[in-house]
Image (cartoon, rainbow, N blue to C red; front, top):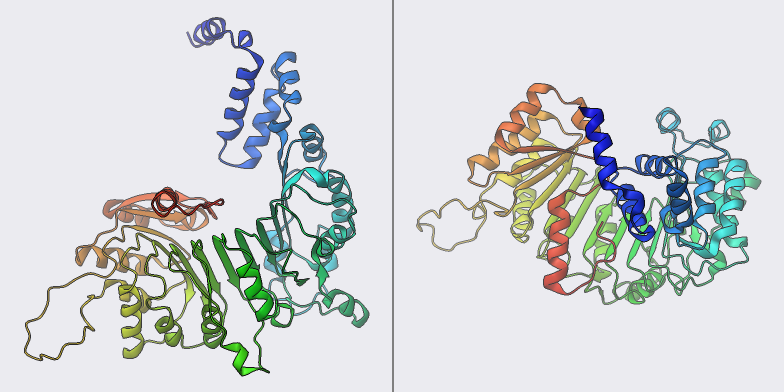
Length: 497
């Protein structure tokens, strides 16, 4: 019966009688229905295996092959074939040569003596870049992730020496995820590699709107970094960060900036001229997402004073440890009243009455928060999300009747977490239910979800809807919040996340 169903279905459907353009639309839907890039690539290959007509139609459509994820092994024959089939279509290329095993083994290295033992070498990257740069004029997105210094420097040097201009490039990301932050090799090599490399030889890319530099130091060019929608700087030594004046000019030159990510990187602190440090903040009316991470208290306040963003809807605070961040919490209070999504990863706050007051006042200033993302937080910090909004309200009448309990963040109903002890999560979930503001959905990031016990999953599923979420992907409610915000505010978000 199953054979007859398939045979009759294929005879009745007669898909090969459809016009080629409709057939290609179906091929696109097949490719886009995959949840990850390896599955999408395999789906494309399988379409070419069915028959001669399908193979010819698929290969002739250049847009089918324009998204290339280098997931096959070196020398990347399949990926380079995709690049060739893409022809003149805009190319979206992603190269991920991070090796988790090597990274975990050498993540605490204080020098670069072990980099030569990495499976992905500078020579491999040089060969790949030589082939990719033949299509530099058609590349729209270029995202490269490596562990070590040498392949990353090969990328920057190749782009600097490239004769052709990347006229279509809209998005560029280069991540060097390993340690150390500085090159600590032999003295001649160290001097060469510590010198900042000009990005594309400081030539202006007319369509560049997304720039991300992680663990590198480039020579910053204000005209080149203007008209951006996303500026992402991570793990850049302070002496190699842009000057405060250049940083301000970059913000001023990007009036439609929608995301600003500063993780252990930001404007260079000026010590010489005290008067010029107190410059008026740059207004960023389109800024929707802000990421601040790995700062000292004073430097974080210094960075926040360089701009204003009253329309911010997504705030991320991460890796704030080793100091008493109470003054920073106080400085954040009232700055972003429209926040809908808040993320707190690895944040420490000294357990004291002044800090408790600061934290409650801060949460009270953001009543529209609907989504909370947490990781590596202690129970004492999570307790602030269960407090009464009126607990620190000042009153002159000592005999006034006690006001009814008002929960902080009354609209909060989505929790997303990872790297959290179950008792801490249970404390937060149970506490929100007791104060009359229960959570409706709980998302757990996949690697952490796999480690959870069955009893823990069942307990969470009884108090709220439980879902598993892939790392780096936004949850559906978060995407919907951004779409609604775009319609109501009239501010475009070219990159939803």
